[in-house]
Image (cartoon, rainbow, N blue to C red; front, side):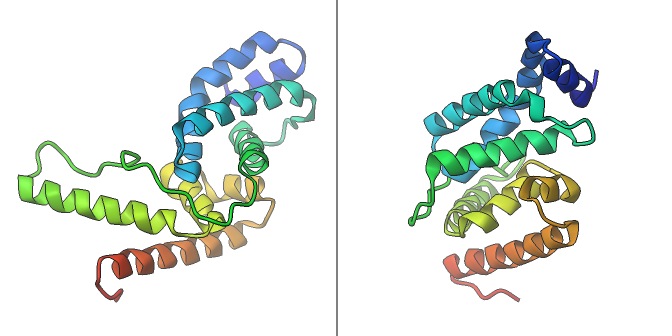
Length: 182
């Protein structure tokens, strides 16, 4: 059964079906918050808040909206409400992404860890809006039309924002590593 169909049942009053949606989406939602906030406890709280809001505002779900886009729109709003507009940037968790493999040679594993740490620092130093669009497009694998629905903008705008955010991430990565971007 698809997410949209399950959500229609939740909207109609069968709130027990919300457990299915929680089981399917709580981990990716947690990772989304963790990439944005760098705080595990806050991320767990935000996941709970999102599912509480889904229950509370289930009547606002529209059948022509993908559930995933609606879920992350609620998540984005919950995060903005909770975190507010911080002046300082958040630190990314060191274990958020590990690109190394057990088949990799030890010297390459060390280099991968260094590059991963630089990537975390570069991503954490980016403005929230750019970091958010990168997390959605690259870490959560959301489609551009889903991101557009979440951010309430055009797909073309999302493409431009992702492109610019990736360029800035590359520039920050190379600056932190003491290299020049080509």
